[in-house]
Image (cartoon, rainbow, N blue to C red):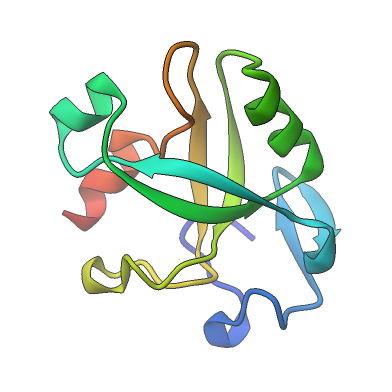
Amino acid sequence: MKPNETIENNEVRAADSVTLNGASYAVQELKDVEVIFPMSRADSDSGVGITIRVLAAEKAKAAVDSGAGKGMFEAVLDTDALEGIGLCKGTVIPVELRDSTAPAVPWGFVKKYK
């Protein structure tokens, strides 16, 4: 799946598999990760926003847990909290690892929905 594509019927945990960063994973293999969803450019720059749940590959989860620094990974949105702006559970979204703040959805992606 590519960013913005959703798992059929938006049922994240019911799907058999998902492709993230070019690799296929059984949904049961994915790990819960909390990331920041910035509500403004200023939020993005300062690393604040609302905390959302996503499902990510174990390697991405390990990078988040270890504070591995900069990088990007794809994850599956695992919350209905963003439906009001057009992002539903099951949507593949980009996530940015940051040195000094929690991982966050990049502003370039978020602003398409604001």
